Length: 89
Image (cartoon, rainbow, N blue to C red; front, top):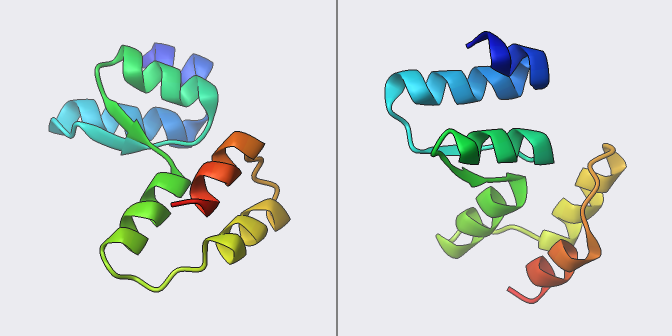
């Protein structure tokens, strides 16, 4: 799908294209434009925080404050609303 490569970075475009080709309904994308494009393609979307919350809820030992800190250290921006939600769940 050439339009995906023209609007998204190659990773997001590949995730969406692969999901559509293989009939996968859930994708993990964090960037806003990628998430919008995935939803417009009738895909369900989660992000890195969603994956961490799911892992924690299934019994993995995860420190959400540490995970948030490491994400921020690597330049990943999270809204205060998302951070508050994560820290209360």
